[in-house]
Image (cartoon, one colour):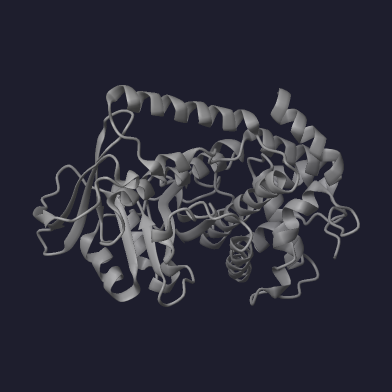
Length: 422
């Protein structure tokens, strides 16, 4: 393979190679790929992955800090011109789509234990905001934060950019309504159904009803306190099935505008908290509806990783294309780390055991609280035993290993030591 600044070579199995190779080998397969001798697309993608990984407050700081590690660092103007290129943004979108299809074939399906979900693609959706770029223009004498709307695959925890926010601070529903149905279906086959789990900001009954009837797209969210929904009757459901433990009601309701919805009321087994869920999906067990919303928290954990572990708190540039490219690079980097973490566990047997122990201890405490309160334990909660975000130890190991150009076999014992002792 072509050598990126002396850091990528098939003959040298480095940490950098293992991380980036699944994406870089697909660059030339993208429809938007072009030959660019001054800064090849392959090098540009590799630069973006490195910038997402390294803690650099600005593009200049990134090039000045890490440029001397490479044999062909671009100058500032060329780097920023490439970053705002609409064609290269299309390349990134193509690449993320290709990589996701490859990863979906290899990453474990974390919802495979529920046969009821076999014909569903499932996503948690939300918006994430960070500081404006250094030279962003003012609007009404104020500089507004940059926002993007993302979807997290709840089966494999891969991340996708849905849209970049427009204007001052675009609302979730306004952004969703701009998107084509095909974009929301994320390439799902025609007869396959899609569910989005979103917080209260995405409640628009008419919008989701239309998506259900025309595109096979459903939603799950929480009921707002001021909603007026008339109950039409209780649905039939198996109260003895462990998956439904904690369900108090499963009702058919109707909105003031005449949209029929399903309302599921559940009680948390450990704390006793009552939560009320709304959905346009009418067939799944009510306990599974509640469980899917519970898993929505995973996208918040991903945002925490992007902000506090990758330290991505600020826009890279001012143009809309550059802002969107940053979000695409963050998705790409997150997905590569997700794949690497799975490879470390499955092939190398390296697992962050302290995090696993902490999660197991937390689950035991929840079971004890449930038993003490005399409530039944939902079987769905047993599937929440794995940690749902990569650790800062892994990110620091990646940064150090890439900076030092460590061979894969040399770096693995260091990661084991990090997990075990530090």
